Image 1 (cartoon, rainbow, N blue to C red):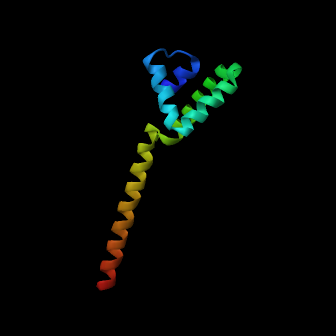
Image 2: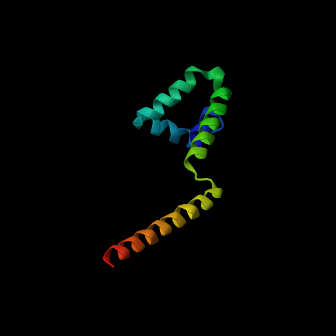
Image 3: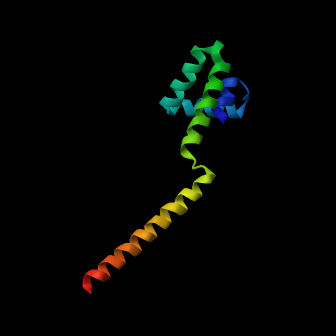
Length: 94
């Protein structure tokens, strides 16, 4: 992520200028950079916290791979309900 590299001070030249140029038109980016500069001594803590937030978001948004069994059971239940409904409706007509 370019912003994290910029905050760490790892970017130089064109990449650094690109972020600074974008911050002129993006108020959210500008505020983020200003916030990090105000707390210059806490840079490592911010980087660690950002990593934790990214991990939490990914854990909440990506469906675990073992949920396929849940979907199989849901599909099976829907099939059974549909078959029961068809059977019931054909008994009503008879």
